[in-house]
Amino acid sequence: MKKENKSVIIWLLSGCVLLFLMVVVGGITRLTNSGLSMTDWHLVTDTFPPLSEAKWNEAFEQYKKFPEYQKINIHNDFQLADYKFIYFWEWFHRFIGRIIGLVFFVPFVYFLIRKKLDRATIKKCVILLAMGGFQGFLGWFMVRSGLIDNPDVSHFRLSLHLTFAFITFAYTLWVALDLIYPEKNSRINIPLRNIGRFALVALLIQIIYGGFVAGLNAGLIHNHWPLMSDGQFIHDSVYIEQPTLIKNLIEGKSGVQFVHRTFAYVVVAFILFLYYRSTKISLTNTQSNGIKTLVVFVFIQFLLGVFTLLYSVPLALGLIHQIMAFFLLSAMTFTLHRLSK
Image 1: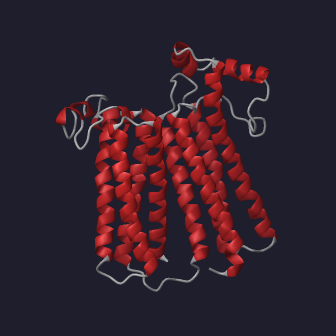
Image 2: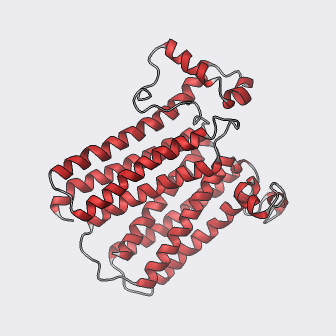
Image 3: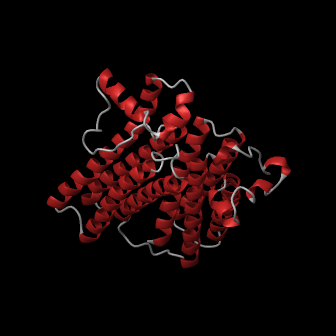
């Protein structure tokens, strides 16, 4: 690491920490059904929650006009105190998003003025800023889907929002790693690198389906392992919820859960294959440690997935499972970077 890049690296890693926090709070927001509590979006006026009881009542009355209250919470003796709870998590989620925007933009301008960024890093940072802005749009695009007729957000939009947050984090970490390890690595094994790339793609597919499971609440059914309900590997309901097999696998609760629980084996297999092939060649310490960390993390994540399913997605386990996915992606990004550059 070059000394002059230290402050830029700290800036980028701080962004990674904030993105991690953003996803954690987003997970709490989803698991507590808080995501539809704020029914509008304003860049400035939503910065702080209502500051008086009158403002709280005004926000609550506005919330009552939308499907989540009219179709669900009106039957649950839902009071202002309950509304304040769900409002907090959605507001906090958006507030962190604003902080991330400032943390990325203001130092970026400062580093530009001080000429601390080379041309390649400037291009990467512009991409990061664009990704951050697009992520904000995806958040509102997701929420909007639950404010029209259906009192729940589209699982496609939720998964897109979640997955893009993971990708933004991974790219931010990658840019930081480019500065931490500026010298080209002489020990690059192309076949091993390609296995790492396939493993990353498999992990991203699994994250996408994790979003589908969350959006459809598909973790609340077939709470058995290693087989689904009735001792079946593929339960009958996988075929009958939707009119076609493809729709069952992307829109049916049983089908989506089947793909997510089964594809976990594929992710584990790719990482174990990566480890096996790595034992046949000479690696640097960072490459070897990255791969070993991947193996440990993927087994922890697999076990967390099993227990989250068996216990019907309690808040704590569901959140830890999502956090571990972040750690697994971090290890995958680091390892692939060390196998590539």
